[in-house]
Image (cartoon, rainbow, N blue to C red; front, side, top):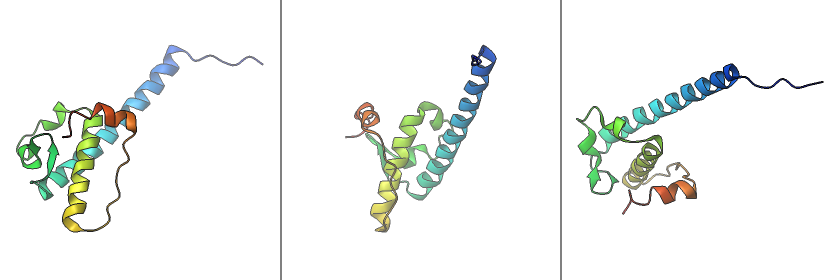
Length: 106
């Protein structure tokens, strides 16, 4: 029995589903980062930048790709753990992504 090959319509459908999922993840990241920024405005999230610099900037999220947003959330979570002295679950960032983010951290 011959297998049916995917057509451009099939690939387009898969692509749109993936884009929708990515947008959802990004929106959740941005929402969580907003909460954390307001809670910990003195957290240092990027080289030379504190969280409070983003509180009044409504378009800050447009400046960063999803990988950088993950890095920012990781920094905020670590700051939170240090402030609260409770065990915080950490986001595990793969080594290859850490290498690309090396310039963001000092």
